Amino acid sequence: MSTEPVTEAQAQAVEDAFPEQGPLVGILVGSDSDRPAMEAAMEELDAHGISWEFNVLSAHRNPRAVAEYASAASLRGLRVLIAGAGLAAALPGVLAAHTELPVIGVPLRATMSVLDGLDALLAIVQMPPGVPVACVGVDNSRNAAVLAARMLGSRGGG
Ligand code: RP5
Image (cartoon, rainbow, N blue to C red; front, side, top):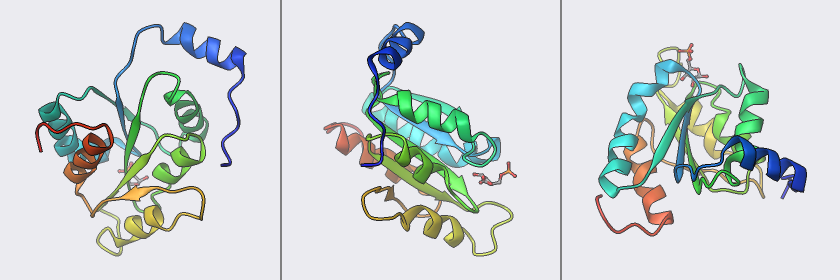
């Protein structure tokens, strides 16, 4: 793995910053404009009784914040990350570069897409060996949540 080991000082800093047990699933998108496409994932996780949080963090516009989020995610108690992005959809891959948690990418059909979402799908799925990202269908955030629920061993909802 390319992930750097977390030092005790870093772990303590995260515990100090996040003293409460956080949600199990982190949902991220690259832009506010992506949020509507991810609502099916939120509803699906709710149906399974799985706690989640939502953040807008762009791999291209906020690269440092994305790295910090992913590096702290496991220590905060998150177990799976779901990341939706369109166009040159780097967010799922960049998250995977900074965490050992499973990352599920949702390619989104952005308005400027020249390939109706296929550009984002290829950007998400074509990860190099050793840094995997699971990938669901274009705009199919519900399936990302179903997969996350299965990873977490949930048999409810669906
Ligand atoms: C990607 O660019 C985002 O994930 C979004 O799908 C797309 C367009 O973003 P906006 O221009 O709407 O912010 O990074």
